[in-house]
Image 1 (cartoon, rainbow, N blue to C red):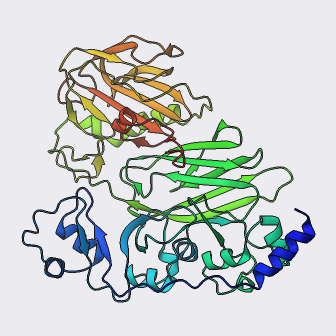
Image 2 (cartoon, rainbow, N blue to C red):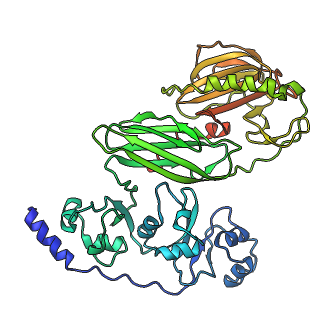
Image 3 (tube, rainbow, N blue to C red):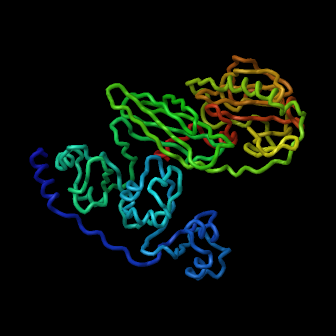
Length: 467
């Protein structure tokens, strides 16, 4: 089609308003019961009383709430359709949420009791009324400053009236430079990041959680270099494919819940640098308290523990860009296995306050004394330590390390390359212990994280657009 003919067609479209959207009826909004829901949890989620939920829905036995039950939600005047909860993605704003879901911003503010648009943090959960008749909307590149609407529509190949409707504008002339623009589509797409350099940015999982391993994944249009920071820790990125970079970062088990800072910088020759700063929601891990422990006093003396901690930190702070492991980590012990203490549990030593936490997983002697490498890597330390006893540290690459403590014997040496399932030592009772066990911990970029996650999921976490 010639440019002249396309221009004529677009001029016709500009003169033809879109069909008006039908108003919603005045019925109460509804919510579909999900696994794990209870009346109390639902009432808390939507800030209504349990009694009102029971009355409005004429529930004869609220203790029995089958998954899939559709409940009417009172107290949300002017809202209809099906209510859902959505975790706010990185880069989302009130304007983007409003336009992508065709919900007036004041409605989102009111039903979520938001006092300021700045309260929409990545990882926070928002209530959204979703109409089943609404089309999915994809965000596209916004109008550039000084760009004519007709030129923009031609370049993007869009119907400007449909774009205006999807972007909650009454006319295409109300589409302003730099503002998010949406078009109807069969499926939602990634955010547009305001630059031709960035294709997609993901932080997962969200919200952040104490003790978890976080995957930061960046996709660019061209070769680039990335750096950044998450909750005060500098990020190390490695190549994960063509124009794709990934960083792994642990969230400390004692990190202060609330908001964590996230900053990202991406540069590429010949392109304007890209920068992003956003607060991410960080939630507590709800770790229980272990019974108070009584140990040799010297093993909690800072004069002893700090030099040892500094030694371990100096070893695990080295960043190897190569990824040695593949797939999910393996159990470091024989089956049947038994766990004596879990990661993150709060601890008290010799009557101290519960200011300590358990930095790994303790496996008891339940099958054999054998200890195995949980994943491929290079042994970077073996030796005898006061607190950790006979210790082995394995570098798995990408800033990921395994620490194996309290061994009776060590079967490998620094510099050895190990494979998953390879025998590396025996369970013992050396160092600060109350009995023989294997303490296994995993570090992600300088922070201890939940080892059991590495036995259940493959890291880096997969691109959630592919799942």
